[in-house]
Length: 213
Image (cartoon, rainbow, N blue to C red; front, side, top):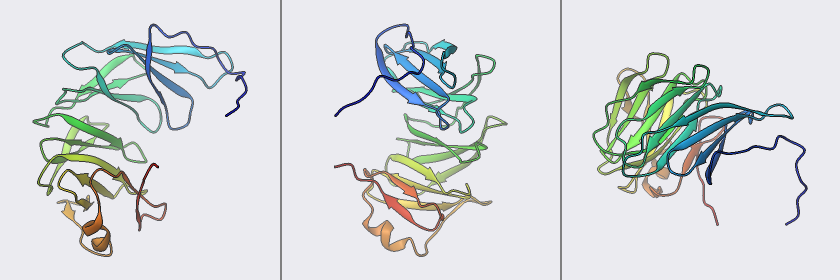
């Protein structure tokens, strides 16, 4: 492989870099240093600048999830042993909310395309839907018989697909009340392997498995 040195900003992290996460539009970069420090840089301009520097109280395990909201204004953070993710407001530099509800470790988190909702999954066998602006839970999705490993929203945010340690994938209609759909996806659901990530297609009518070879 060959590459050229970028003319973009040169960043100076606060310690040994362990993870890098870009925001959806590529304007912000989260740099995880060590096990509990996070720097968020604005890299949209040639010079770049440090937007926010935070430290998550160290417990028994390092940071697990660092997820930007679609607009890049919020950052969701969890540790490996955390039951409650924290939403940080990058405009104020302060935590907006701690999302309590799961009774075991949080395994994944994903924002809806419009950023209005957040889905989290856990080893407690549930997925939870959160209203981001209100910072409160609005739905609990139960159906898997083991840990819920991951989730993905449809492009319109009205449905959610979850994958579980029970080797199933489930598609949820996020109406009131939420319910499991059982339609054209049924064939795929029977064949789904829980540990293979899945996403909705752009039309919201297909589910695709992602396999890295």
